Image (cartoon, rainbow, N blue to C red; front, side, top):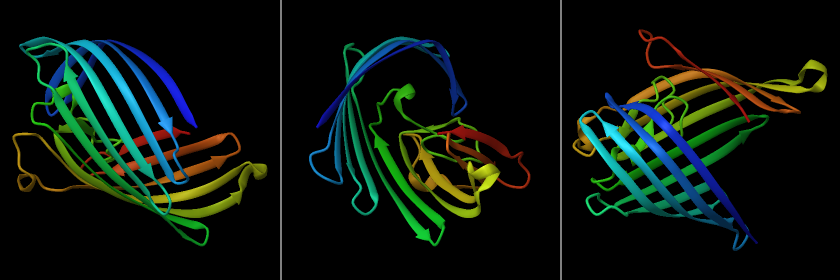
Length: 239
């Protein structure tokens, strides 16, 4: 069957910092989406997103109004393969339209009770994509680089990670908790429109963590490292 959803977000004076650029947005976003499973192992997602906001970047102060149509295809028969395409139509004559395309692949390999996770992802957007719509990376984000701050942006990216989950304790604390130890490696290139792929080095981060799998949900603790000279980054997530 089909599942429909409606979202509304009001973001007031959002202040963000990427690529040494401090910018502010203020406005709202309305999104209508539909999910459809045509057959086993396939899922199709469609969305229409209307966003209107003000954008301020140094001396730039402009109004933005976009209608963004999105399509996403997921296939998970053996691995998880995801393809996503967005087209942003500017409703203001002086602003440019934009396109974004992303592809990701995830794989899980079980070794007895242990787990090995792989991910490879990439994306490209048109050169005239507004700065607040390009890809964002770093930290424990959708494009993770857990030894970095969440302050990296670009019109193209290629990234991935490898995680090994080692089973440590079963039915801990009166049978409520399973405990896993984690080691991970993140890598990626996030490329601004005025930079070529070969101009940037690979960013490679590593780290360790713990996962507490409880009857109430999952809590995860990660420590990300860039190199021994930088301070580690700490992350806590609940699922």
